[in-house]
Length: 177
Image (cartoon, rainbow, N blue to C red; front, side, top):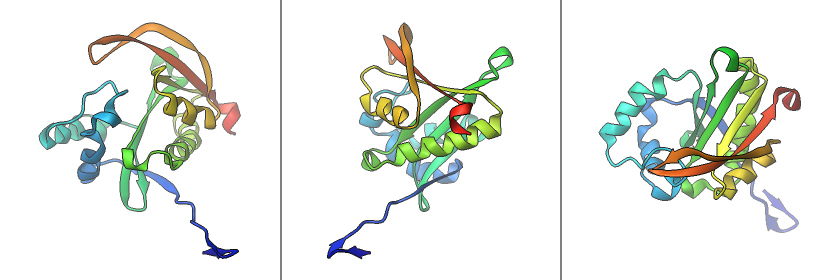
């Protein structure tokens, strides 16, 4: 597309689809990258066999574990973990994106789609996310999607052997209807 003599790039759109072991090659691209997994609770994968076990035991049994796709390419994943019993009114959001796709708005798009589907699919009122105070990119993505920083949880999690704080972000179903 050309506008006023300048080439205009069309916005690329992400989609969400069921994440399966058929996507393991794409998964290995980001799951083996220490920069991508720096803020994750899990260490980078070092073997395909461990990744296959993860898909079999976790991904394919999870009720809301989606692949973030750009065309047919899986560029990340996103999950909603619904609370149980008295916490069933909410879900925790988690997401990861392959580094070469950072800073293109793809995580923002994926979270937007997840909020639309998640509130309806799970019949919940609240979606929350726990973010490292050092992970400013993730904070910005959440804020772009209407999440509000509710506070800081001091010494609330051990990540890779180190006791750490987390910011808690949340958004509510009324904001997305």
